[in-house]
Image (tube, rainbow, N blue to C red; front, side, top):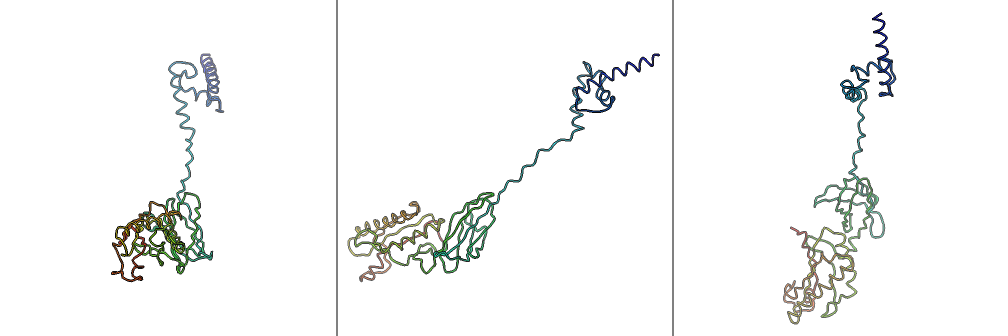
Amino acid sequence: MKKLLFTLVLSVFAAGCADLGAGKYENYRGTLNERGMRRCRYWDECGSGWGRRQAEKAPAQDTARSEPAVKAPVAAAAKTQGSAEGKVTSADGSPLSASLAFEQNGKTVRNVSARDAAYSEELPEGNYHVRAAAKDHEPQVKDVKVAAGKKTVTDFTLLPSSKALARVEGNRIVILQPVYFATSKADILAKSYDLLNDVARVLVDNPQITKVEVAGHTDTVGDAAANQRLSAARADSVKAYLVQKGVAGGRLSPVGYGEERPVVTPDDTPDKQAQNRRVEFLVLEPAQN
């Protein structure tokens, strides 16, 4: 009789714990023992006091054991590559087979070939000086910014060497014609516009040249002080013209030397005097060895 009574009390207790356990763990669907006795493993987990406090600690441990941790999704690797592309043509629009050098910090980091005018290259994002060169044509340099995950389109138009009136040679921009001025004045004559337009092209196409001296010179005819002032005024006029054509004024340093630096002496003939009357373009920065 005692055994039967003990069994009945135990069953009622287990059922109560099962109900409370099911309420506390409503998503759990197990047997009576699993749902009740297993969850009420502390003596009075379903009641109060020490057992309940212990039970409050248990679910977190159970959850950690029964539910695998969910890992946060791994972010896709950031794209650091972009592409530079475009075409290289001659001044008349005809396609050119050219080579392009991509430079950073004065060093070539990539050489690319453009065949039938087109080029395309994957590159790390960043800023580049790009020099395009083709046979029998003047090279052209442009600044290109490559952005990650994007296409940067830059076209080059190269002038045939036979038509170029100015070009970079060492520490000079060599001009194939004199700059003509009105007699004893600083006014540039119209017949020199094509020449100075080409000097402007050379400077715009070569942004790596950051400082150029525009040097004015005269012959020895007349007063030396007056010649110095005239040469300075002519150098200023040339700078002003180039600035109008898109060259940054900070890149140009006009200087008048007057008759101090003749190329021929004595200049006692009109031909020699014409040689001494001149404008020169000297590359100061970057300095050439």
